[in-house]
Length: 165
Image 1 (cartoon, one colour):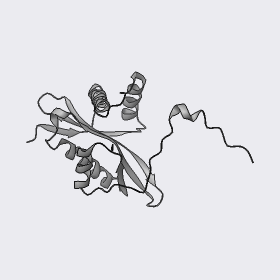
Image 2 (cartoon, rainbow, N blue to C red):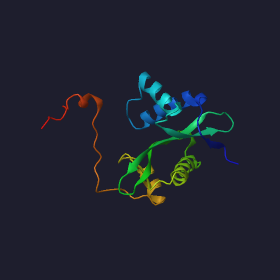
Image 3 (cartoon, helix red, strand yellow):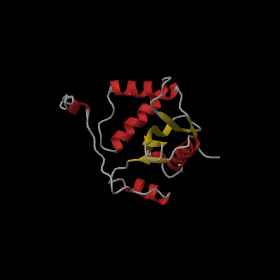
Image 4 (spheres, one colour):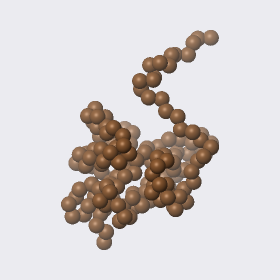
């Protein structure tokens, strides 16, 4: 029997989820979510019209959350199927090497299969060699022909409404 369990989170897990998000931000050298963002993510995870889905890994003894996977669905127009997009997968450093990350990932793969998705996608930081090796060992292929672009909220205002023609 493993020392952890993988489950769907409940609202009682909210603080643990936020703690893991902050730990991930620290690991990735990013600013953690502010208070308003923390409230929105919990709302979006547990509202009736869920924008996000998650699995969490809990220590069987303490009940403390030690890892999570956060995902949502996009759509592939060429496959005419949903795509499971893995937004985050993270395990606390003190709990790595126990198969938790792999189990969280496999749960997401199984969820993609259960929902008849055409594929599963995610992004990985270029410096995260451990994650890259993990994904490639499972058979994932890096997409070299695509660039990821991002517009942030502060830039939205600089883009005007299309002119009438």
